[in-house]
Length: 199
Image 1 (cartoon, rainbow, N blue to C red):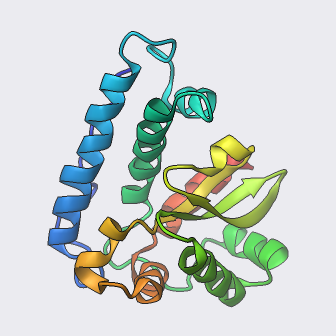
Image 2 (image 1 turned 45 degrees about the horizontal axis):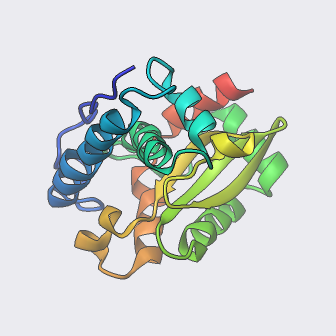
């Protein structure tokens, strides 16, 4: 398969003031486009040509850095745009997801604190995740473009903590960005849809 840059599911200014039009213009139009372009160049003429994105991510991990880094980030960002929506966030979750968060993670408030701590505690570039592993919800963090797929888990929510995701709007205040993400941006319906498929 050839990677293509998906359109944003909303206007560039739709997530303001929590994520600005300028951030989305840089992050989606330039950074994500670069992962697409570089990924396509890296897989050309290799064993990864013609494979699905998930297969490429899993099979290139620790084997081909150029392919993995770009494929991993392409996968992460395809979902990242859908993990957000205008007027998102809040604590009103679909019932089965709320129940599972209570069962596995000690309730929504504890999830929020632990998820933000994972994002704030990821040194340098990376991601924080809500993942399904062995039928249970877990919070995890990964460096750079790595994601739960390569650790036997399925990501159902991820937040990008590379500086280009927040520096225009929050400068070095990563914890403020993480709070805004959970409180105002998360598209819980999409998280629930992925949870349903992962179950």
